[in-house]
Image 1 (cartoon, rainbow, N blue to C red):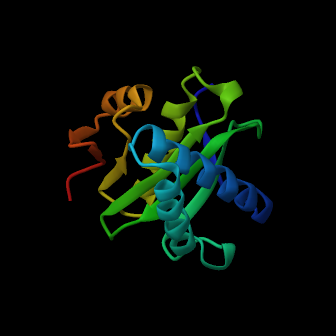
Image 2 (image 1 turned 60 degrees about the vertical axis):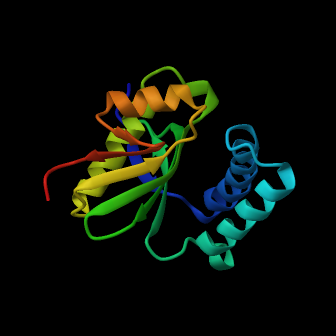
Image 3 (image 1 turned 90 degrees about the vertical axis):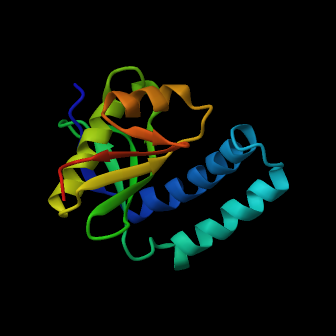
Length: 157
C-alpha cells in the first residue's frame, strides 16, 4: 500500500493547503529554527507572497495531492523546478491517519519519478534538524547531508 499517485491540486485543495502550510511553517520556524513567532510569521508570510502570487503557484512550482490507487488522499507534495537538472521539494506531508505505513516513502518515490520524467538528475530538499523521522527517511532513500541541506541524485548528469 505504499505506492502513491500524484494528482495536481484542485483550486479548493490549493486554498486549504496554503493556509495549513503557512501555519505549520511558522510553527516549524519557531520550534526547530529558534525564531520568535513574530519573526517567523513575517518571514513565512513574505515567502508565501512570492510563492503564491494572486493565490496561485509561481512559475516552476507544482503542487500535488498524493493518493492511493483507489483515490484515497494520503498527503501532499510541493515541488519546484529549480533548474533543468534539479527539482526542489518545498513540502511533503503524509496526512496523520496514514502515517507509519510507508506512504512518506511512497510520496518521495513519486517525487523522484516526477522529477525524472521532467529530465532532472537530482532532487533536493531542506529539513529542520529536529525532524528526526524525516531525516531518517531521506537518508534511507539515499539523500546525503550538507549541513541540513540534503540531496539524492536520480542519475548522473
